[in-house]
Amino acid sequence: MVYCIIPFQALVHHWPLALIIALILYLWLCHSLRYRRRNTISASVSSSVQQISLPTAFAIHNTLVTLEFPSTFPAATMFALFKTYGIPSISSLLVQTNQLAGPPLTSSKRYADTGALLLEAVLNEPGSKRAMEAIARINYLHDRWRDKGRGKGKGMISDEDMLYTISLFALEPMRWVKKYEWRELSNIEVCAVGTLWKYLGHMLKVPFHPLPGYEEGWKNGGALAWMEELDAWSRAYQEKEMVPTESNHTLADSTFNILLHKFPKSLHAFGSKIFATVMEPKLREAMMYIKLLKTLLTLAANELTHSSIPHPPPLYPITLAFLISLRKVILRYASLPRYTPKTRMPIRSPTHPNRMNLDRGRMHPWYILPTFRNRWGPGALFTRLKGDGGLIPGNERKYMPEGFLTKELGPIGLMDRGKEEMEEEMKRLEVEGGGGCPFVRM
Image (tube, rainbow, N blue to C red; front, side, top):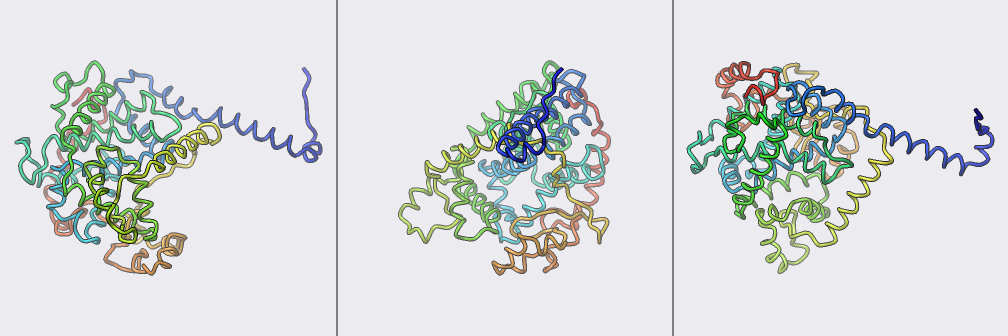
């Protein structure tokens, strides 16, 4: 056997050749490692893909969130929450409570509290105290408004709205990965996502009886069949119920106000159009952006604000599609897989061990630990330059830099309420929250 060895000095004198060789080796390494994690997940599931145990599903889902798609999964989850605002029965109740559509301080706290509850419920191991406490708190906050299956009463949460909401949490990450990422989810990964959200839906008292396979318990298809039925039902419900109303638009304005607060006002219109480009046409219509366009055409350019978002110009979706395609190619063929988890899990406060801190905030620094990085990092310096010194973590105690207690999350008027109800709810969750496949037990 003959080996071809290129002397180091030769490579130095022929650096273009060395660069080409290094590039080829790097691309080969990317090709060899890029799908290894997906293949490892597939090999680790020895049982039928239709029935995955809850701990296995959680582990796979956690890998998707922290390693495979650490930007897309969280973004899709928050977009799913925003998408529910396109249903008038949901948006009208939220406007009625004046939590998301109220003063900026109130709406930003509601946004932070919702994010904290979702992170605690989804990213902590099923059956753990932190996950159970978050689910119990969500149930307490929702039970006050549940319609108890009597149909869509005024100012109540219907069973259908609950099912639609959980469907978006289960389905939107899969849809976003397919649309924006370098690969789609495998059947086993879809099964894992479905298994976890079926369990969470049951714990959150979401009724699944509108789905065709409810009576038989999806015995013939498991999580994959459940996800397919959920997708079909969700699209049909959205087509019927997602219609334009003022309450939809009010919540959209409030959400954009939170998302774009930290950006210069000169970029608000641009940011709003980018976000509107991501929204599907029916959602834009339900948020009344198409209707707004006709009115905005009569306004002077300097009167447009971030809360007045027209239909995005044709150049925006074309440019966005190109950038997405470019990102897919780079990630798939020229990027090594991530080996350091990127987690958004709330962390235990070093000064108040019973409380938890968030690692980032929107608009106001709710529950953000006042570390050196959070107070003097690039983002904090930009905030100081804008003259928003009060939004630096630790500068104002009202944003609770000491962290949150899960049992206190929610409207300010309910911070000291619901503890007894939560204790009773956690007893139910402990009984019903075993670790097997939810398509066998539930």
